[in-house]
Length: 300
Image (cartoon, rainbow, N blue to C red; front, side, top):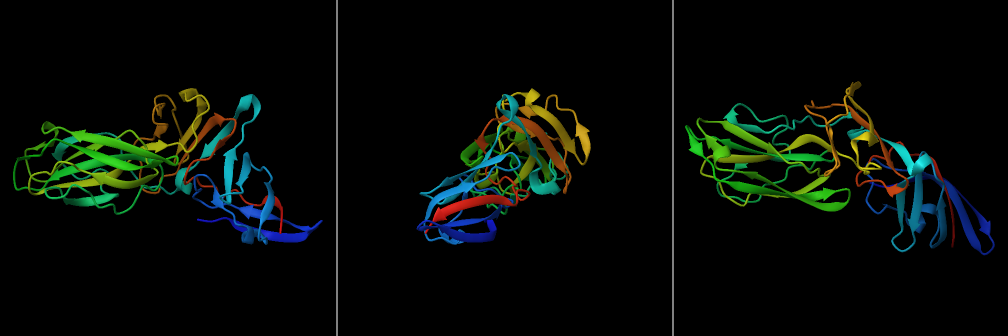
């Protein structure tokens, strides 16, 4: 994604050129900042750059990397309310509760990330798509044999990122948890850590013939900016499809997630919470509503 620059004007400032204009941000913020090169604002070299604070955000320009960093600003008491609406109101449906092996279908979007495939002769699952928003991951195993079959104990390793940092998690199954009594039985387990991007999922132990594995999404939604005190009291309001949800018991202080329970495709969820005074917004955070940010630059 990229910044949109508009309304550029220029005049002389001594032997330098001063340019002014407006910046609009995109829907997937890049950690460490968005690219803003001198040519984007009518200069060949930037000597001085300032973007003016707006809507609870401040900005830092890195002259070495030519990146414009976005920070959330604190208010009274060095905290501020932060509103997070992941996906802009259109997210994939999901579940969040483990299901022991039994007859039935996959959980909602239970193989969205990696489609069900033969688990007997491969250890690396093929990633079809990554997560749509930061959220936890589920692993599913299915017995397609004509009758009873017992799978092998294994620990599937998920690798990706969250808030711009590398994130890994292992979801383990015992042989007992993969003991199927009939054809087409499915077992699903969910992890606790959120991933804003999944780069690899590996199953280190091959399963018997005619077993399949897949990777799906869960409903524990990762927050892009950490709550001010990392306590549930920081969570001020939760909504799902325009209805208020009880906050109690939803926030995971270790993994910085909110558990929204069952979600349908296209669900609209939102979190209003307190964040610390100043801190960079999270990777892939939607800043598309942040427009007309005024800037002034001096250079040649």
